[in-house]
Amino acid sequence: METKKKILIVDDDIDVINIVETILTKKGYEVISANDKTEGIEKILKEKPDLAILDVIMTTQYEGFELAKLIKDSPDLQDMPVLMQTSIDVLFTTKPSVQAMAREYRKNPEYKDLDVLLVKNINTGDAGVDYKSETGESIWFPVNGFIRKPVDANKILPEIKKLLS
Image (cartoon, rainbow, N blue to C red; front, side, top):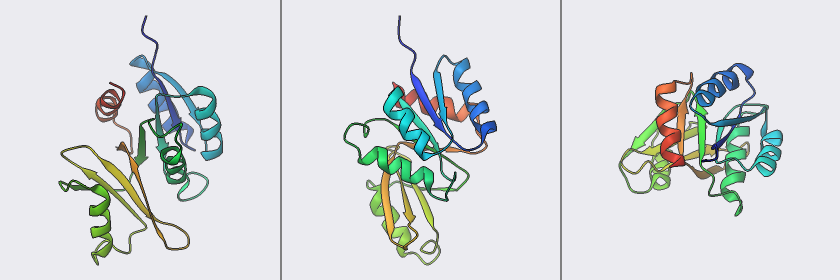
């Protein structure tokens, strides 16, 4: 028998966790949850999920980003797909490098003052986050995609299926 794929949801909103958990459990996924970055890391190390869905704003404005960056910077964890759950608009590009595109957006007067840029390549699915830290420096890291809030089962399920196949 195939083992259930394990998905970690990190969100400080219990209603969001319940909704996503209901959607995923119905599709046969095992769901674990955490309410903040600290608990998220503990669960990742203990449970070894196949995928993580992270809210952005929890205890702090960038907590979800910090957790995603920790995962992507860790040699043991970097292969785990990460989806960012957000209501921020995603900027789409067809350029091969999403990071280069984010840097270009940073130079554009319309976007340069934004605290957060979420960029996704519509052809390859490559995605990443460029956010300004509290010191004003621009921090970049790759992610595997974005889930729009409020969560839509018809959008989240194909995205998860693709990342776990």
